[in-house]
Image 1 (cartoon, rainbow over the protein chains, first blue to last red):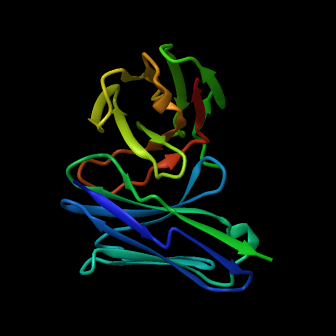
Image 2 (cartoon, rainbow over the protein chains, first blue to last red):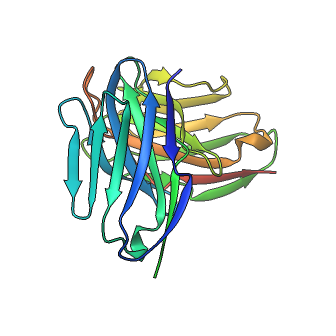
Length: 111
Length: 115
């Protein structure tokens, strides 16, 4: 059964800090890994990483896929209070159309 | 703004009742997936609809059913509601590409409370 584990479960940082969120996965025939930010309800798409695109960057956020270690990290530099949210990691396999999600990392940025 | 809309925003039902949730996909997308998110957990896949047919299903009982319409909008129906069905129901819209990675964009969700 496909599985995604995220760590830490939660963390609190101060504005300006850099944070690294972790995601490890077990999936049959990996196709892609996706990161989402969930503030109130709707998860907002951040990045999709695949075998042909293992690094993505957008502003202060960046993500890397390590296919050998079956893991990914999401980095946020110079954190702001607006970065406070739940960050979800999900994987998709080639054998199905579902996304399998981890439980998420709750990030709180204090001013 | 993802363009995916869901209705209603929230509702309260009694155990044993039936409920219908609705989702309009983002313009240009042909696929809708439904997820259930219990408090403190990640979303769990219920099923996906592509070209009006079910295109994959998660570990949910048959009382969870769905439809997709020619305009790609979709409904999720849940019969014989149980207390454990209380959750946030998320709809995700995408352009399905067989065998290729594709992104899924989520709507704001429907918060269902079963009492």
